[in-house]
Amino acid sequence: MSGGTPRGGGGYIRQRHSQGYASGGDDLEDDACSRHQPFSLESPRCKTWVEVLENVLWIASAVFIVYFGDMHSNMIYILLHDARIKRMPLFLGMLGIGVNVVIIIYESLLSWSMRRFDEKWELWSISALPFITLLGIISFCLLSFALWPIWGFLTLPLLFTLFMACLVVFPHLTIIKLRPQNEELRID
Image 1: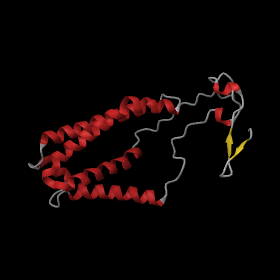
Image 2: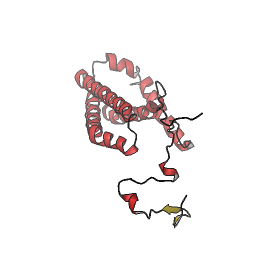
Image 3: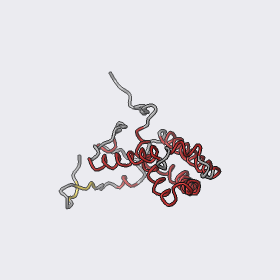
Image 4: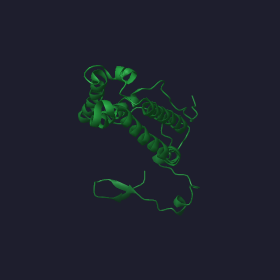
């Protein structure tokens, strides 16, 4: 490894002095950053107890909301049978959430074929993120309008709590472990 310039934290900043480095990558690099690094699905760091506690609180709050509903019956029964709910906004809001989930799954599977990290962000930021955001806001408003007669102002924190619990749970719901093929040839 080559040396660098010292900086405040005791580390070194790598500097390139060759003219070919900025010229489009025609020259080969001989350091560790140019070697192929195997991709790992496991998280590189452990979660702190504060993060775990936050996640448990979101999930426990969502379970409380779904189980107790309006204190007379659970939320599933209310969504299916209560006449106070405005059905058309409820169905449109649920359809919007379903479309968002399908788009996110499709974009995630599509990003597995990308090789570089910046290509993945270009794919997400240009094509899907504005549409997903707009559809999410419209779905939230429709669900708030549909459920307002039952919970009133508490509809907003209720939906936000359910949304945060889904964000906590969904990354752990893997159907299969997808591992990219290692493209290096083995010589045994």
